[in-house]
Image 1 (tube, rainbow, N blue to C red):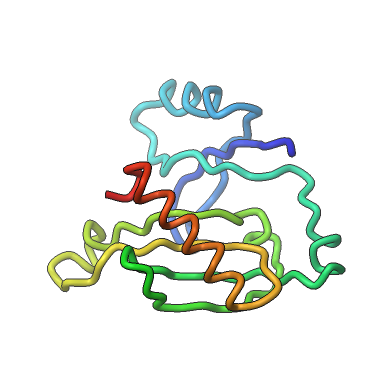
Image 2 (cartoon, rainbow, N blue to C red):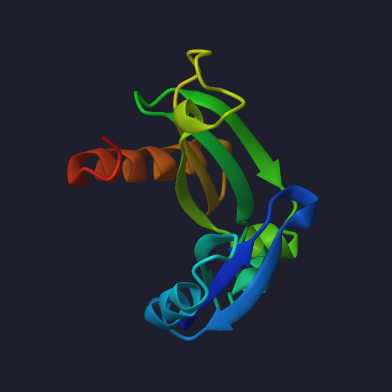
Length: 140
């Protein structure tokens, strides 16, 4: 599948996509060209996802919050709104570094948006990805 790369800025109601690029390198070049800007980073999106086909085949979109030890904090079935459909993937939420959580003993968490046919399958998909992230050193 073809991917596009979005440079974003802001948070919550101030969140916005600043520019779209065909490669992550071009997106990084754009951010480097304006070093004093308030860019959050680069997000990767699948262009023309097969969302309708997945829904017809019985898949749903699931949001899973999983701890490093494999425990789940939250598993929620989502309505396939455009933001969630384009943000399928896995990200570590570094809560230990977030100002609202620092010093409160709240651990980092893997937040994953996945397509699955059941809650059990969604948790299994995320758990397999969690194991790979730990083995590769991505989540140390």
